[in-house]
Amino acid sequence: MWAILWLDELIEDIPQLPSEERPRRHWSQRSQATETIAITEFQTVLRRVRALVSDFEREHWFAQILGFDCVDNHGESSRTLEDVLDAAVGKGYLTKTRDPWTEDDLYDFIEVMHDLAARPTSGCFHNYAGCGFHPRAYDRQSGQRLYRWRMNQVLVNSGLGVQMASDGEDIGRIIRATPVGVEVLAGEVLAATPAEDVDEVHHAIATFRGRASTKVEKRAAIVTLAGVLESRRDLIKVELLRKDEGALFQIANEFNLRHRNQRQRDQYDEPFLDWCFYWYLGTINLTN
Image (cartoon, rainbow, N blue to C red):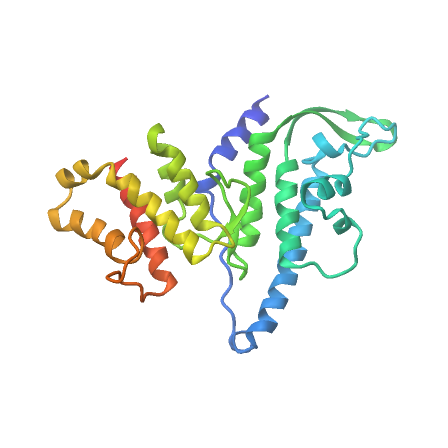
């Protein structure tokens, strides 16, 4: 029992655990063609993802749905991984194909396995023929949380620019990597935002950080956050300097975000939208 309690406490402390630092490239590695580096990096990530999923499989992390091997067939399941992949993303062939995987294949696989993950919490040891541990009960929430944390150790330290969402309506889905310094901001905002605003904030975060989000979708997400801040304008006027409050809404009103007319300033690059989004999200966090 104490071991289970210790593991639960460890899982709660996952955000504070140290992460592996990505080693710096040397000259010959930095000077390769970009396309070559990308292909090599992808194959490395693919191998690491498959190895990690195999580790989880050996620990029966997917046994709640897929069952487990047993000499007496105690762990049989009516569903196979091929069945699950086919039903979820139409890619049951990934379990058999020898063709190279695409990035889309990899991300589909990661997300499907996340949805299957459940940590075994109790079981028994089957002695016959050295069969091994057989799980009986599972915890899906802690299992998926640990799955996301370990998978992000692979993804965040790669050059693919993606990670798994750890909170929000897109939890467990592949998103664009969060900029350094604001990794915990979305989680803090979602945890503290009042009920009347939380759906809008949830949707804005999921829209903005989607892996395939366009400039139009990013702009829409910023407009949603601006609307939340507008409802708190009286508070902002009291607590911030007048010029700060004015600048906050000047950006939304004059930079081709909320209004679309010939007076709008629209000659800016996409990183401007990233800055604006996290500025507004940080301000919502402050007003929370």
